[in-house]
Length: 201
Length: 214
Image 1 (tube, rainbow over the protein chains, first blue to last red):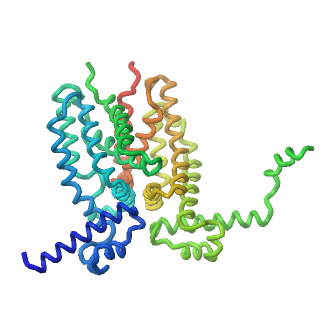
Image 2: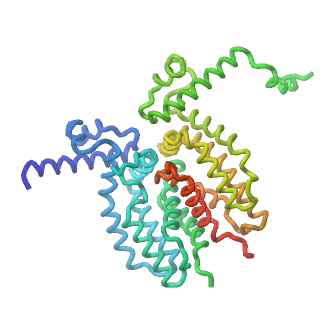
């Protein structure tokens, strides 16, 4: 790699780290490109040569976190035992445990996701196919194990699950709930959803 | 006549010209703000432009509202008021919980169709963590959720839904799925039938475990 290319990558990494920290400290609206440039020690212009704006920055920051979360999930999944409903609960608990470490960052992502243009520049929440795939495999495993009805509409079920998962993040914003409160709420919601897909004996 | 009874009749008295003018000014301002927030988005719509569109000075706007967020909160609540008025006729249209919910949400989508950017900004806004704005948005949402809860309660009364149904949790989850459709851009879909079909499927999934045994 040429020195020029290396510098470019280093700048990009600094900009993304600055953006991640600022979104996490101040939320989406109060974070400006000027602040990001300042903290990264680069010019406003050089931020704009790499990113079209705040939306794309946030989207890239979130994309860069996927690997770490995926790693945590991969470590947990082989150890899951018992009824499918509890396996799904454990998977969602890992998500909450991970995201609440940078809670305001995730809330910024939710905030922005309602107003983003859907032109493909930014990835909407819930669209990550690897995370969806993990849920899908677990549910299909449930069908094979016999505790999930075979006629389950997996996609719709995951959508309902993720809708509740995302909306729960309003709890810490409103009432200062921590990750265990979020997990408890999700456990109830998953329970309700499973009442509809549980295999009848 | 006691003083209390005089007070009780007071609201029936015609408004003073001053109060009427004030109310009219507020209406103009909210309409202009709604239009600009919808066309330009929350960030790009300035108080100065909104004031100009309403034929007011910027100072006159700040006499009624503390800042842009305050004005936006008032616009959202005003929109909720209009929405609830619009919903009234829908309630007895169908006799199943699923049918009633579909009718309810379809009429919400129909109402919001001509100002979707504002609606999405309002949902995004409710996440910003400004306690005052949050409280207001939640007050509006709560009123809509009240309608959903009523539909479920009637379903239980008819014996269609199980008496064990956790109405509050189910209401919230139906709302969450409804809201997620804005995030996925489904509400812009030109195919209204597709949206209705999806909504019906979402409702069925949430109510699946609660069909009363035949």
